Structure formats: C-alpha cells, structure tokens
Image (tube, rainbow, N blue to C red):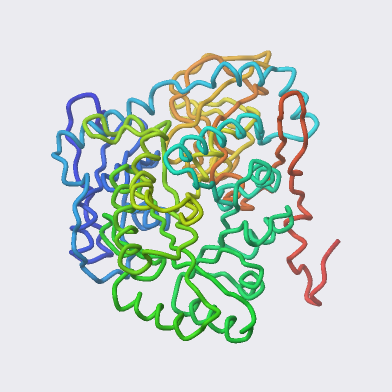
Length: 533
C-alpha cells in the first residue's frame, strides 16, 4: 500500500478481462487509480467524478452499474468505437496527479458542520427528536432550502430573465420538499408515473410539470391533453404522441424532444433521439401531417459537471435550434449536472473549472440570451434547468447513534445504527461533514477509526479516518445528505427511518419511520396466497 504524498505516480486502471481491447483502451484514457491508506481512489478525468473504495477492489467496481452510469467504465455489451472528442483526459500526467492529490487532501481534511447547524444540533434537541421519532433520523432544514433556491434562481434569472427552476424529483421526492419548491414558484421535473402522481397530489397543474424519462407509462394521453410539458425519448414515444393527436383532432397537442448529443463522453448515451438531419426530418415530417400537433421545446441532459461541458451543451443545442427551430419554441430545457461545493471545487487547480453558480449561469444561459436578444420578451422561450443535488444536498442532515466501539486486528470500528446507503450515493464521492454530540459517560480516544453501519457488508463505511473522543450512545450528525439518499436506500436488512422538517422554530414530522408491516404487506407468506398476520 502506498500513500499519495510520497511522490508516487498515478496509473491508468488495469484492463478488465471481461471486455474487449477497444473498451479497455477507452476506459484507460480517462480513469486513473491511486492506492492510499484509506483504500483505492478512482478519478475520472472526463466527468470529475471520484470515488474511494475502502476494499480496494477496482475490478469489481468497474463492472457495477454505478461505474457504468457515472462514466467510469463502458457497458459490457458496447461494441462500437465512436469518435473521441477530447477532454480533460488529454491533460498531462503531472496535472492529473495534482488533481487527485488535491481531491484526496480535501477528503482527508476534517469536514465540519457549520456553526449555524451546531446551534441547531444541541444535545437537548437531538435527544428530543430521536426519542420521539427514533434513531436514525433525517432532518430537512426548510429555511436553508428556501435560501438556496432563491439564491440560485436570482443568479440564473440575472443572465436570462425567463429562466425557471424545474426541481428534479428523483433526487429527493419527499412530498414536503417538493411542496416547498411549488411554494417558491418552481416547476416539477419527473421521470415516472409515480413521481408525476406526487406532483399532481401536491396541486401542480400538468402545465407546471416536465415529464422526462425513457419509460413514461400510460398517462401520456391525459398529460398531453392537460397541456403538460412532455419530452419524448424515442420514436415509439413520438408515435404515441401522434396517436393522441389523431384521436383528439379538436385538441392542440404539443411536445418536446429529448436530444441525444455527443458532448465529450466516449460512448453514446442511451437517452433521447439523435439530433442528426435524418432524425429531425423524420420528426418534422410526422408533425407536419397533423394540424393540431407542434414541437414546443427541446431538452438535453448530461451528467458531466464541467463548465466546458455546459458550454458545449449550449452550443450544440443552439445549432439544432438555429437549423430546425429558429422560431416557435416555447421552452428549452438544459437538464442539470452542477457542483459548486465540496469535493469537486478542489479537483481542478490548474484549469478554468473553478465552479460557482455565477459561472455556471453565465456559461449555460448567456449564449441563449445572446441568440434571443432581438426578440420581444413574449417571444423568447422559457429556459429551464433541472437542479436537484445542487439545491437539496446541503439542506438535509442525518442523525444516528453509536452502538459500540470495538477493535479488530488493530483497527478501530465505530458501529452506528445507520447504513452508508442512507447517506446517499453522493457519500461515495466525498466524505460527509460530521459532528459528534456528547451523550456517552464511557468514552475512549480513537485514532483513524472507521464509522461503519449496521449491515453485514464490509464496504458499509459511513466515515473513514475519524479521530477523537467517542463512546456508545453518542449522537452522530452527518451533514449534506439530501441527494439520492432516502429515495435510493433499499429495504436491506432494516426498514427506512423517519424525517422531520425544521422551519425556524417549527418542527414537523414529514415522513414516518417504516415498519416491518410496511415492507412485508406485498409479500405472500403461505401456500394459499394469504398472509401470516
């Protein structure tokens, strides 16, 4: 095992035996790994994503869905060899090494809960909440969410006044959080009938909902007739839209197109429709056959986080607009993919990619402001982004309780009544801020301990490198867990926990803890198809 700070060089990840030579070459172009005292770090030059694998099993990680979805590896069945567009992966090895050093240094620094939250998470408050609602527990800070929302909206509207927020439900669909977005004037961005029904139950009109995703279900017809904002993902969905228009010739039907654009990724995305001439002409031909059907908008989304990717995204979309839709669009949806705090900020010290909301707004929206500058305000399209993580991540915290402190083979483990899955997939990218609330009478000093979860998985590590006084019964506060946490936590070993909302001096339960019955009511327990109650 080597450490990063002894001058060791980074190395490309070794080829996977289960994929072809071309796939290995592409993967090795932009993914690097480095061994550290905490495990194996993998850095993706293409997207900026970085993960730390405590178990060090890089080969196993590269074959997971997470690795494929976050552009660390290619799908095993991918055979094509597309044009390489070039990106940060072309950076010289010394710069790549500096990037990873900076990431690791940021990770190792003690990440502290800010002073405002320290005043909130007193022993008195946390004891009261956990006794009332159980441990562990999510805490949604509504006042901070409201501030974050208004801050983002103001910055983006300064660049393009007809900008609107379309909150990504998949990031965290807790209804009270989604209701806060509605109260602030935001749209709902959904990708399933389940999420669509949440938005409708909160009082959203379909015209205030953006319906994306590759598998929309049977609600398309009603949604279109209610003037919902629907972006087709395939030609089969185009056919479904055309069928609605044919069945209802008296209704004005409009829809948008999810574009598939090559930004800088090394293989095609599975989402959207190619923005080539053949595909666009085919769509326009179908629309021209129906007097009650029109294309109202364009949509694109990429998981790439760099400012350069946003610059390229805007440029490609404007090329499509200028060629096919110079007039007539009522909205343009730029998707999401932004990071301005935490691990990512410190990752690229030698490049232009020092990110802020102001720089994202200028990069993404200013080209559209210039393109439509001569249009009257009523003729300019609405411009959406779909923020999720950037809004909600920092506004939800997670309370847990230490169950025991133990040593195995010289390594100290702090076992909590929580799981890493409850901190969300963002916790695989950077370490969550941590605060320990003193409640234990029997404490011990630990060095470089691992806070681990209740599951039977060795990889269930919530926090590595903890040093300090700690004991059984102490409360742990993990900060910034609002994104892809509660909504991704599987019913693995234990049911899910509760969530409360803090709004000034007001405290409110907004999600009950799940019971065994909640999880088991859909299962059959006996041979007759009944339940053992």
